Image: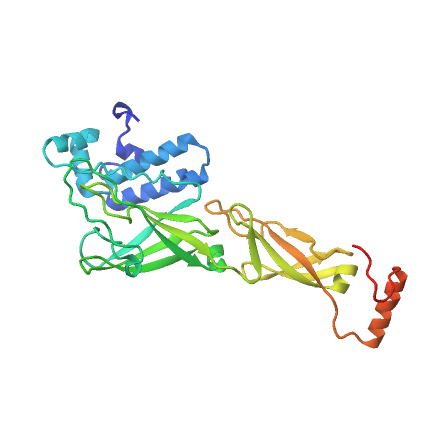
Length: 327
């Protein structure tokens, strides 16, 4: 977008110039949720708007940059640099995400100090410290992006969850950061927390924090499909029910059980679809399907009469005792 065609940042976010910091943040989040690339795949216009609101928010959410923007408009960077006080353009671009990335919000409990080095010793130093670089150039640079693996249960992935981290900066200041993980989260999903990564250089914007999700294996359900929204569950089924037809109970990720009608003469391994009973799809409000896989259970501890009846059945079907017929 050329400077001559750049829209006023307040107009971009749809707020008046008297808007409070809270109003600016609320307006940004509302538009970001609507324009996020994950919800508008292949929509170049939405992607451009997403980047535009990110640029506007990067300036208007910073008190110092907002003051200079209010004074000089879009030329604030050049004018201020010419005066010998270089500072960053604040172009935090939440639009720069990939299809497997979800942008989350984070609330921070501040117990003293500035926002610098918030994740310098994140999780006891597991992520490593921030590089402290003394600015010797007028050109601002975005801070490094940081990644941290996060493991959740299938139940947490179904309902959505959050993680609260207690971190300590190099100055010994303690902070808490709460990150929301969306419903439907799947293995490899990268949850983006804007501005919580490495420190920017020469007043450039801070980098982002990416939580990389890993979902624990579940004893009852297996996830299927590109986004893991479909579920498969093996359903133990008595031989008599599989042969004659009947009803079995199927577990669901909600923790409830559904009654499923099994047709007569159902083979082991047959999959029966329960539409809309799978996992949520990230950011869409829709749900995948649940596939009940029939696993026939042979009866045990047969009585003499039951053995006799099975023998009669084998004779009727043309199968002699102790022989097997091809499937």
